[in-house]
Length: 413
Ligand code: PMP
Image (cartoon, rainbow, N blue to C red; front, side, top):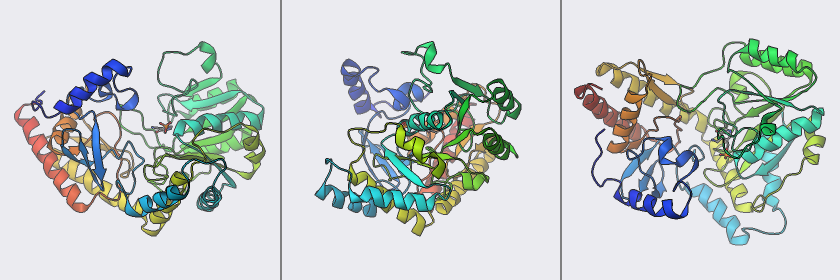
């Protein structure tokens, strides 16, 4: 693989220092091993609108958006003004601020099945709490989830293997996405002991293409949950508000009992939320929920501003249009150079794979080459559109993609 010498020199220097004082240097999903070591920047310096700069001064059109939270573009002036105004009055205080009530009212008015909202900081805070609420409400133990679906880093669901004991997962049972027979089998095997089913609106496993729900999937799951008194939890952390401001279930025509939201909630300010049906309010009030920073008002003010802007500007429509233009352009560029490229997932949360590429070599090389030219594409994780991505950004990205594919063709990759 061709690497430009010194292109990521500062990134590598920092990583060498980090490796001495931080386990793995960079851990989690931003670790270099999650992409292709040496082919992507490791450290970011600053970001504005649809662009960001790494510590070596390289500039990128941003299709990762902080892995999702930045939905309106970096440093959106209205969101930043709302957060700064709150922060000038209080950052971390002894009681929740007025803005928490206002935000809960606003969210409850957006998500029509919900009667209440709570807040945390990260997605995992909410998915783990939601599972407990389901257990508290039903008095049952079992949680059903989809194989390879990511719901966070807590022991019941982490994709990691270290530091766990068998008991962590005794009551967690998995079925494959869209496999309703396997789902039904679990329901009958654990009848009257299933507390909750937690699912993302569509399947977005790492390394693989995203998979949409098969026709009838959601209606089957929804009616089974209703019939059996199981709490249906929608983990809308990744796609929430990018697809539909009323929650992604609206796009797929079903209604959950609980919804977890996080990315795209506050344009990058740390905030997550869970909203639920009236019937779950008592269980929700019993399951303990708190954190040192969870009442901090600036992120909540940022969220209110972000939600109002997304409503005013019909942001999901913009994301879809721009995402479609990008995907179509990439597929056409692929055809011009003799590559069959396949778009997966909704256009606002797009991902591209190459046909006949079981080792992912083409996809990895393509993403690295486009990134080297100035638009960041992750080879293993779905991408995220922001409304700051302009038609000009998309056009320049497509030119970069064209150059990358031409080079790959020449090198017979
Ligand atoms: N659920 C889904 C669907 C996610 O995409 C993520 C984050 N990628 C999480 C849960 C966990 O969120 P966090 O990393 O903020 O804890």
